[in-house]
Image 1: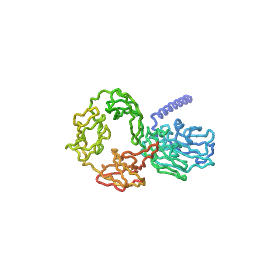
Image 2: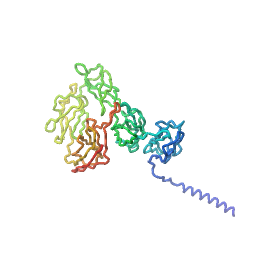
Image 3: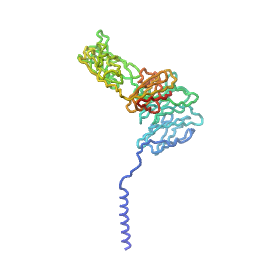
Length: 499
């Protein structure tokens, strides 16, 4: 009986165990919140800056580190020639032989965790032996107009006889701030690139970039801060890839960025235009927003069909009171009376180049503008044979406006541009001043971002972002820290911009 009881007890325990395991395994664990934070350094050993030349450096993070992200993300004096081991949340680096007397440990933001989250900010730390002292100078500042989640590398260059010599590079943190340590007395330049800085004089032609706007000089080991750098679009220089003629004066060139661009050409022949079989040699000047430059000579043989088509309008852009009209080919104006309003009044115009006609409008102009196309011809004497109507949106006289008045604190010699950008519509408004006071008298109500910069370009709308070779500093720029609320029939006063 005891044996039977023992057997039954054993089977019951097995059944209960299986039942308990089945119950315990039902469902899936809910887990915690999604990890969206990058790893953070919680300690670096040795803690003080003094160490011996054989000592290992131990970097401890708050979580496990993806080993594949470490190799190129840690340098000492700009090099990764050292032994490195990764153990869970620790990185241990040791000298192959011995460290130098001064060593700058740099930890890039590219170190990531196993959820692919990058660090929010890079780390710099200087170690030195007892034999030498590090340089006390520092340079810190902020990048303006950065894009979220992009990494920006910043290069430091010494200036000798107006020539730049690369010293080292660092990264900006997630918010755009940066700091160079261990800087000797002397003059410097700074470049910033969106992405990887390899050779800045080529990089800034292809990627968004920034250049320092003030002279940078370190004297007596000072800590220089407030170096603001605006990140702007690339400054490309293009080449000609191929080309052909549409008619005797109209060349279409394919450029190195892939776009096709029309050019007006005039031959040195007596009739001033090319015919089939002519060798066409072009060396056109082109431009980016800051520079004019030659694209070099390009040669091809003229081969085109007789042009019997009249010019057409490729597009029109109305920006407040300015109307630009773009034509499909170079045009000739046979009369000055090209643009008329509803009352047949002449509207003043200007030819920007053989392809673009621009006109200044005013609130009294009617909503229709007539193009007297019979006076427009191409260089093959093909005329537009109809009157074209341009529908211009009426000025909204019921729109609600406010005004903004402020003061510029600036010790330079240039005019200063003030730029307002509507936070929602991204519409931009500009004014400039040389008396250190500014006024926007009629601004649609809304919330606005305010920026101000030196007027180093002849257009208010173009910020001068600097050229590397030959070196030209960027314009000084200030971004007002708060959004400005402009309300209808109110004047906002007391805004001060401090350069």
